[in-house]
Amino acid sequence: MKLNVYLTIFGKPRYLGLVRLKNEKELNNNKWLILKTSRGYEMGLPGGQLSHEQEERYQNDISHYEETTEAMLQDVELVREADINDIETYYLCRQEEENVLIRAREILMFNDMPMKIVDVEYMLDRKKLYLYFTAEQRIDFRAYVRDLAREFRTRIEMRQIGIRDEARIVHGIASCGRPCCCSYWLRGFSPISIKIVKEQRSALNPTKISGLCGRLMCCMSYEQELYSEMWAKLPGPGAKIKTEKGIYTLESLDVGHERVNIRFPSGRLVPVSISEFPDFKEAVLNGEEWGVDKELAAKKKAAQERIERLEKARQARRNMRVNAKSFRQSASRQEALANSKPKQKAKVKNQNHNVNREGQSKKRKPKVKSENTKKEG
Image 1 (cartoon, rainbow, N blue to C red):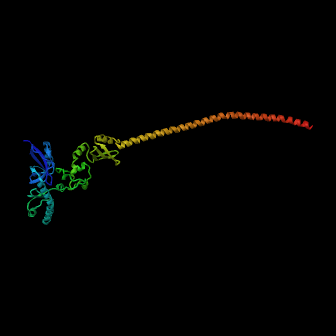
Image 2 (spheres, rainbow, N blue to C red):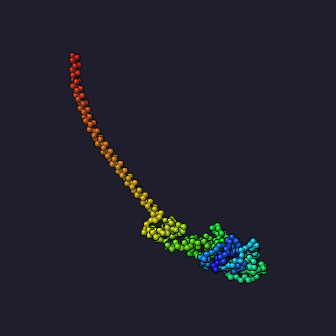
Image 3 (cartoon, one colour):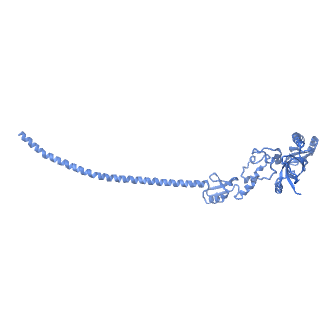
């Protein structure tokens, strides 16, 4: 008989459970469920029906995550849908856990053990009380468990968790301003190494790349597959190309635009498309310009050619002015010569006229004198 598989979420560490039901039964995604798990009777929320492919994907994903004390994905049994009394009991347990946590920490101080109680959790029937703690080494807490059992009159279960699980249970706020991914949707913790940080060219500053747990942030693994695929087409993060003009350094990747940011010898950061990177490398090795430098070189060349054209035009205009001046001077000289010849003729004519007048006057004078003498006589 074919069974429908439903995903459920239960417990403070947000364990995942698979509920298998017959075809005629369906789960309402808005109602609480009473589940029987490996820990006991618990309240859970349905996450929806899974296909066979989705179930296999969940199984594969969980197998790649870091191991924890409890199985993050397990088969659980559906007891029934929760009623009002079950829901009230659940929230009363959550309220009581606050006082239990304070008292458990007080008892821990009395026993003086190097461990930290992160949180406590009652099972729905209160037959078990789980204490989640962190410690740097193995601890003999048998005396502490006896004191807790005497105090709370129930079975005590100690669960050592990692610092990443602590952030998951506490529900902190990440540096992005949103709740930690592990506290509301992340199914498990994938291993993150410093190699991932280097490939993403993130600042190697612990305060910027670490989460609340003190480990590398989980979100650095979300785009790692894409980064690896892009770096496969490039020499590698921080690679350098040595040329006659200087050293070109691969600084970082721009995943959204699929390009790499390259530090030029001048100090500028220039984006180059990943598909154009082989052409870029060949160009700079041959001493050619690229990108902005190429545009600037083209503009500089165009400006130089324009200056040369203007200089030639200016020289041509200067030559034209010189030629025009010399032409005007020669023309004025010719005109002056041409005008000077009639004046000379007029001068000679005037001189001749004056000479004639003088001659005539000389001839007339004696005649006048003779007339005067005649009168005198």
